[in-house]
Length: 496
Image 1 (tube, one colour):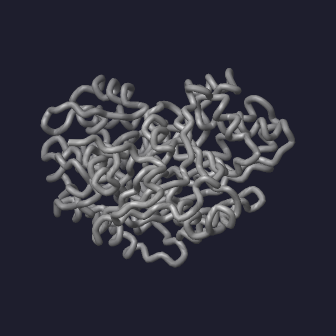
Image 2 (cartoon, helix red, strand yellow):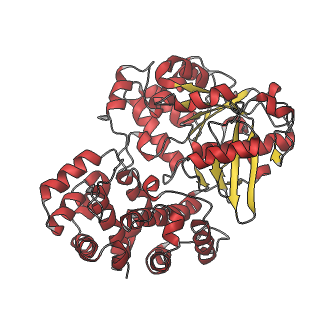
Image 3 (cartoon, helix red, strand yellow):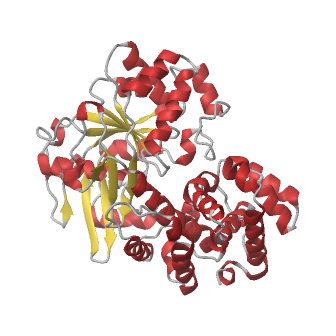
């Protein structure tokens, strides 16, 4: 079989198949956005919103040059895949109506921070950079999830405090670039957090202020006064890349694409409209919703979508289901999920303006069940110590404060405890990926086989559960009972 040519600019001259191409002059595009943490999600979400604006308006009339430069904060993999393709890649939509594919053109390059941190700082500080956006996952903020405060003892933060011009962390890079703007008397860039964190913009503003104050109070004061951190809510299911995705991209393009992304049809982006001098792409043209207050929308999404995703991930993985779609095909899981929403989450969740929460959960169930989106339970289960406080434990606290039961929520927490123990129901090892994986496993092993002791050991991690839940006998009792059911009956039977 002849080797296919690498995807590259030649494809922009035209393609005979049903493949959408950029409709703007890519050669005229200049970078106005630097994005930290260039993973599959942002390439299937924020980059596509920006692509749609450029397609609708063209480069000259889009309110500025809104090309995107990505930055990888740890590894060169993404750069190595995209650089030979001049930043081009295929976005493939899998939905009930079939497959749609497009070539995405507004990603202009990828920097690798560890190779040259000064180059990334300089690019962020450059006058043409008007927005720095982030998807670095919950653990990338070097904060305590239970309190939302910066961890000055975090290894990366310690390094960045000692080496401010050559940072490692997202917080350190933002501080280094903003400091250059401040020292030069220039206006700042807007900082746009796109991670699933409550009040994500305000959280990041607090972390930057904490970090800057450890160096210079006047710099910290300038950040608090001058730098906008709009909150956002982002939503789209984007599975990790597979060999099947690479093959599908080749079939659709006739080229080898090393960096395709697959996504569902649904997408949502709610953004607080607070940017330096109002400079931003007109993402509303692509369906983004600008609002004065994102909080009700992010609250809804974190608890109903992300909370449910974590529930299905831990329980589904333990029951032997590889993907969320496989899990939703099991009637026991769909019944449990609807009960979790109806009985435990919805009663303590106020709806955002104009939202029907029952209809929203029905739409979520349909999205989760989409068999064309193979979102692995193992992938969603990553970094649970960072995700549980945002996705589930707030609901637990509110229900306990009202004297309401938490049986289903406790079962999800118990499933996470069993998952963190590193051995599944068949006695096979689990590849647990979590910043606290080693200390969690050590604490659980030291607790022995007694369910109550193992639950106490897990709840003792106050960085996850806080002092309040760790000491709440009702919560500990519910999680212990659920953990016993998981051990005796298995995850699927425990759902009943």
